[in-house]
Length: 205
Image 1 (cartoon, helix red, strand yellow):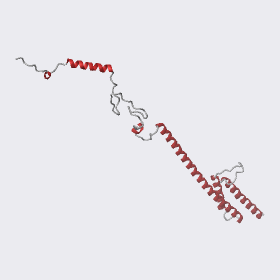
Image 2 (cartoon, one colour; image 1 turned 90 degrees about the vertical axis):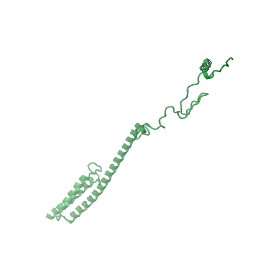
Image 3 (cartoon, one colour; image 1 turned 30 degrees about the vertical axis):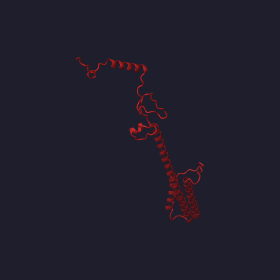
Image 4 (cartoon, rainbow, N blue to C red; image 1 turned 60 degrees about the horizontal axis):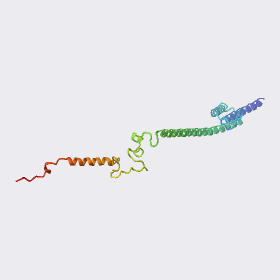
């Protein structure tokens, strides 16, 4: 009777170890959850189950059969190795997510800078001086400066035009010129001769 009871306890103990091992494997994502028929990884739950098996190992020390000890130690070794592997994978996934977030943030920053640069206009950068923002003489045409491809205005006949200076007054009309010449001749005729211009007359004897 006592031997039969011992055998039953050994079977139940080994069954408990296997059930906890299966629960931990579901938490590690190694096997499918029979309730949901999905792979569901939960490392916190898996670690709790592994800790429970470790507690059983300590509490039953010296009161286990060889088969119970072998089953428990094999389950703990397998679970702990798989748990470490999942931790590494989880760490790698976290690093990958962080790298993707940083890349997305940099891309958004670059796009924002490009949009700001487009609103300021070409050639204007952040922190540029007022002179740079206004542009150089090549960008803004000067007053009186002929545009490229435009022909320079030819000077009228009889007039000289200096390069870079505006055109002189237009040539006087023929009527105005004739009047000026006639006025000049009238002034010369009516002008009184000076003392030096008079000729001395010979005295009568």
